[in-house]
Image 1 (tube, rainbow, N blue to C red):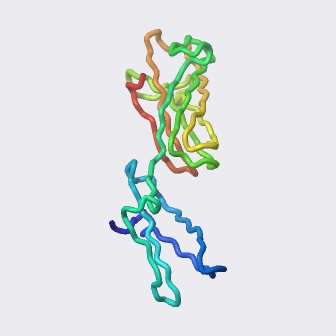
Image 2 (image 1 turned 90 degrees about the vertical axis):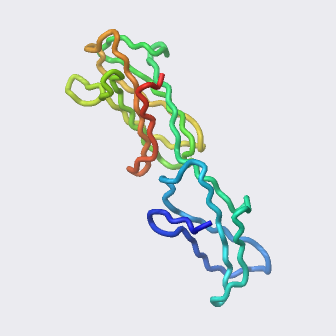
Image 3 (image 1 turned 180 degrees about the horizontal axis):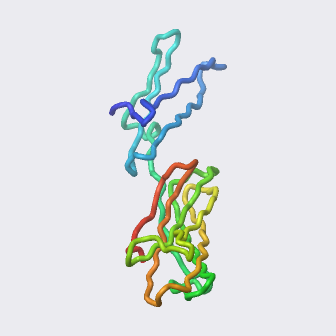
Length: 190
């Protein structure tokens, strides 16, 4: 029931207008940082209409579903597989390719996002290193057309030094405009 405060302060919007008729509508927009809100947080918009500094109407109803929005932060689910045959086993090859299908939810259509995938040794929990000592990673930039969907991240690396029993898992991090939004980091994810 209290005004919502983002890291930048209380979220509000003001617009001045001159109506063309005695009744009608006007659109208002709010831009704010919702990254730290819990999934399912509900925000209610209260409106106050003033004329010459005097309040002439207001609509402030915490239970009005037409004034309520639910916040759902981005969510990632993934499925990594061998590019050659689509199973979960790779060959110890100089150019091994994994395709990591990342299913996402809660993204803004038309905005550009960056996925960073890192191959991790399941036993040690540390990133797999290439022959030059760098972590095996891949970056994929995409623009979703819908709030929910999926995209593929291709990862190619030298697997010739891996033991037959080495288990690998892929960790994913999602960014927009350089800001971290979501991650899928689970050593036990099948």
